[in-house]
Amino acid sequence: MKIKFLGATRQVTGSSYFLDGGGVKILVDCGLFQERDYFHRNWEDFPVPPDQIRYLLLTHVHLDHCGLVPKLVKEGFAGDILLTPASKELFPIVVLDSARMQEEDVAFKKERHDREGRKGSYPEMPLYTIQDAEKCFPLLKDVPYEEFLPLSDQVKVCFHDAGHILGSAMIEIVVQDENGPRNIIFSGDIGQWDKPLLGNPSVFDRADYVVMESTYGDRNHGSSQDIDDKLCKVVNDTVKAGGNVLIPTFAVERAQELLYHFNRLARADRIPYVVTFLDSPMAVEITKVFEQCKKYFDKETQELFKDGQSPFNFPSLKLVESVEASKAINPIKESAIIMAGSGMITGGRIKHHLVKEITRPESTLLFVGYQAVGTLGRQILDGVSPVRILGQSYPVRMKIEKIDGFSAHADMNDLQRWLSSFKSPPKHVFLIHGEEKSILSLEDYLHSKGGWEVSAPIYMEEYDL
Ligand SMILES: [Zn+2]
Image 1: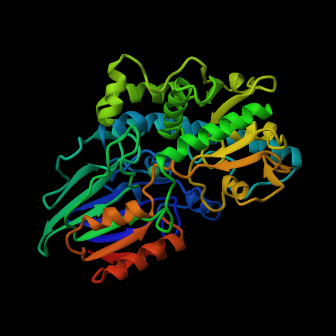
Image 2: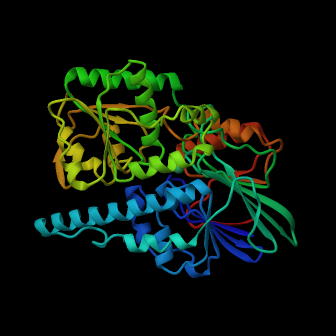
Image 3: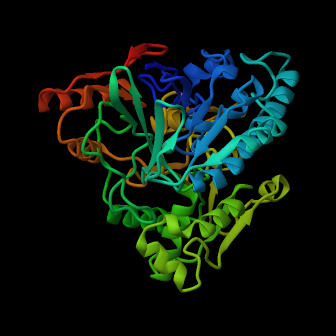
């Protein structure tokens, strides 16, 4: 069995790993590259001819793990896309939104470039269209957690709960060939322990090979109590100043998680019932899926549903679906909370809101998710000013705040805890999905434990398993 690393190598986005052996060719994840320096890879031919791949296994439906699937299908992949039942519900919503967002962004960019008489660095067309995205749906096959499914005579796969977002999985592949049995565990994105909504990440006693994410390999998040305190402070201070709170959100999970917190805080009278716009066409659909998928949440959340209430809804919540309704959001008179995508301000409606708010010192831009190097979100977080938004330069005058503990990702302690579950060191650990310093920190940790073989593959590197 060979493994080839096709993305998220010493950077965070574009997760994709190709396995060849045991009579079958498998791709694990097919993610979009979202860091500016790697955008070009989205446009290049796939390193492996898509029509030769038999199975695509998806860990979860974040775009950096599944955002290139429609392109893979468009370019010839016709095998099965295996994913968990909740991911199967979420996947169509997520990729349709991605296609729509790309179509909108391209139209906007083209208009601007035409006006300015210049050309952009990439083709002025979406990577894939809504029709392309729809062609993926017949290929989706759901696999329940904790059940082994044969992929060939010699290879089988099992999905384990990753506790990262609804439907997220760690993928275990077992190979039984002339070299004996081996298992490979793809951690996917690892969630946090004891977090609201989801169960804890799965852990393993043993593995031969581990392909492990390292996003927060070098730092820890704040505690959950800090999240509530910080949210209250940001909302109350901004309302007092007469501004708006703008939150770039990942539409899946983070948006619902915020709703859950705002709902709880308002009920406890810690914040007022501020008009809250969830400005994403996915919002209603995703909330429906969350309600259908009650059984995948932790016990406490299931209890909340039992009272006949949705933990994701409250009276001052406004769900915004159409572009017209989005443009009409202009809450200058009364303070509002506005949540919109994309989560790293790489595209989507958040940019249009930001244009209105960025020069208002009374408003706050609140980051609640990871901001990859090279994204507009990261620039602003790093204090860059002025910044370029939708082709124009703006000084950053609004307040910038961030809450780390919201992350759906394990932090340094969690990653070390996950590794500690292995009773003996695997033959090899491959560290992926992290910036260099995070990877180095995890590498150091594993070396300090003694007996662990670790490497951080580079793009297109191949290993024998
Ligand atoms: Zn993720």
